Length: 568
Image 1 (cartoon, rainbow, N blue to C red):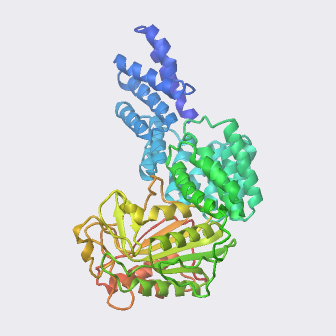
Image 2 (spheres, helix red, strand yellow):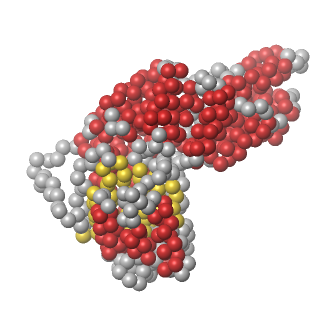
């Protein structure tokens, strides 16, 4: 960004040289147009200059740009976008398009960000900063090949671009090239050993490799550096580096079984003010994981019954399904729930059959499965929390749910069998929040697959009591597409979410012993050498055919490379 500010600074110097209102400009000008000015002072000075109504065209565009820089320092990206849009209307420039694109990136709007970076590159000569920022947006979209190409372009123009080496390493890691990733991140650390960000990314690589002591050491050094000298780059969201350092070290502590230190780091993550999408995602994860490790640290009362592990992990009624065995690195875990015996809405005959069929298929391909049938809220919470806790040390975590599902205010909920759906402030507290499951699993070093054979519906509708023989409480609306967590953060890297039907449509319970979706899923789940997204394509084609186009399965993916559930 520094290079892009040069032209703006030159224009600014000429503006304050004008004779009219010289005294006011001499005081306000440097405050408004110096990138080291504290953000509140910068914004106030720019506001006063705009209020003078002296400048027009390119000069006024420059003031809007600098006020946007102030908003960017504060993490107020909506105001950054508003001011840069006005600046572009008055006088487009590379710097303004780059700043607006970066604000869209920080909001998680990657397509718009890429369009702005494209426009910036069209306006001027090749610029390494813009290539780098566009690479970040491609990486946010999961297009790692295009991201690497943009980082290559930056490194060619700026061979000592620390962050481009770092981010190219992140993209290589996403593609499974751990050696290449480690080489790039090590180079970033050599170029600038005072930066915490490359150390945080190396922490993730050590976790992938199971070297948790090195991960914790790098995370600790990154936190020390972030506290000692907080990043001042205006393109770095406030507090984002420190939040990232704490969450990565916390995950390493938890994977090692050091729940006390993990708890302290999760608390530290939540105590910091987050402004950008990535930081909010980290805090959503920290909130869930803090609850899990706190439970793990709570001693069992002496008079409590000893836990019992049952050989056949099936459970009916209010009691919880048995927890999976302790996870080890490389372990593949699954949570399978089938709810059909509803007390207050029309029962569904097939979810129990569907869950058992899917659980059997997963066991056949080596998954450790925790299975629950017709669970009430307490049991459903228990098995979900047990699963999320054990998933901290798993390589693959898979969730399958069959039963009723609803959307409330843009958030998706799974329905225990004892819930009575009535309008009211506490209604959602009686259900299981899908965003909580997603946040608890959000970790780039693990593959997460969530499959929901549930319809998308509105619990507030009068048709609740007559749900009929479909997996919907009311079919007029759908579950929210899970492109974001409830906190506003983007779908975590390494995650695939599949639904039995498209948004706004009904997932059929089926006329046989299984739903159309679970029947197809059980048939294709164990196909050797079939990549998971290809497998879901086959499932989709079979469901569309068997339902005569009435049901079209749908999925959303941020997987990092190809994933095979059944070995080749």
